[in-house]
Image (cartoon, rainbow, N blue to C red; front, side, top):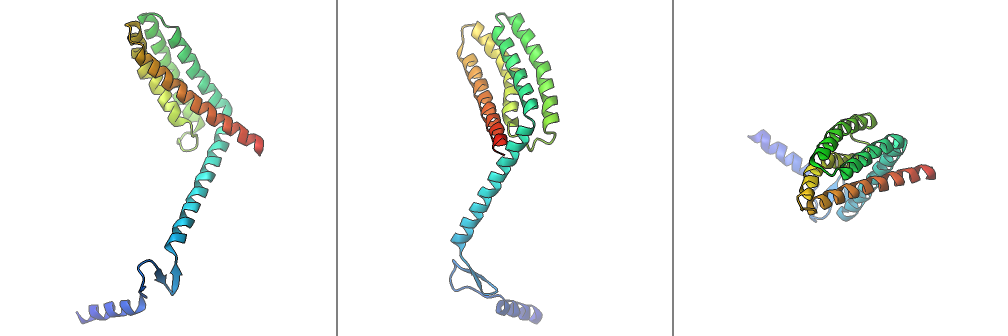
Length: 177
């Protein structure tokens, strides 16, 4: 018990204590918490910018592969949009499944670990649209309910626009180097 009290006393005499709760002292160096927080935020911003530059460079270097994937999505959308019967929708859906498998294979070739290509979240959303959402929306439109199809088309267009915008930025970044 006496040893514990001695250790506590020694620890209290060695560890400097600050009289102000806002200023932390360590070896008699005062740290400004506001400046520290600002420096940390600036550092985080720099890391984010560097990460984005790396993603832009990566996607620029894989531009041909991305263009091929986008062409497959456009092809699938066109086939769905040409469908006028349930049988045509079923055929388009079967083709969409095959194309989705091809897109996933291409995605794996582009970025196996999915940590460099920024557009993969949009690709995943587009895959869901062509595999799961487009067929029932088309069939609903045949039955006089066009809103579901309009929503699917709008979501598809938005994801494609996001991908094209990012890839255009990646191509531009390549021109600047």
